[in-house]
Image 1 (cartoon, rainbow, N blue to C red):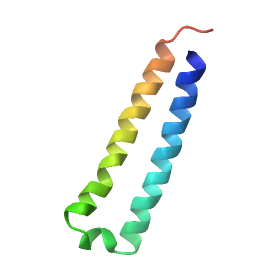
Image 2: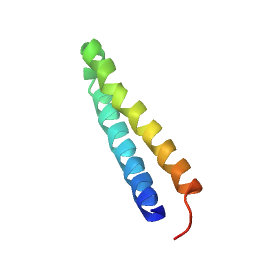
Image 3: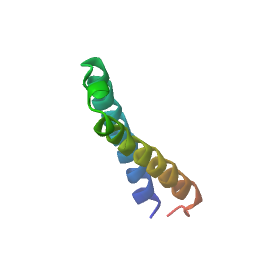
Image 4: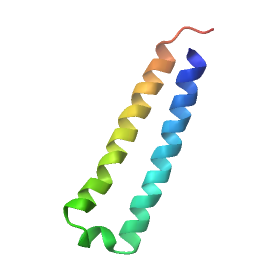
Length: 66
């Protein structure tokens, strides 16, 4: 089970990095400011990825070595 949490933690980090890239591209092309509420909705998945990464790391630390 420990390896599942480690793999999930690594996947969550990868998703977070990719999503930061999407947000950076939207800011760079100045599209995020003209999107209104959709621009805010573009930022919300990053919060989910950060939360998931934290939970997977916590589960990885607390899991028994097997």
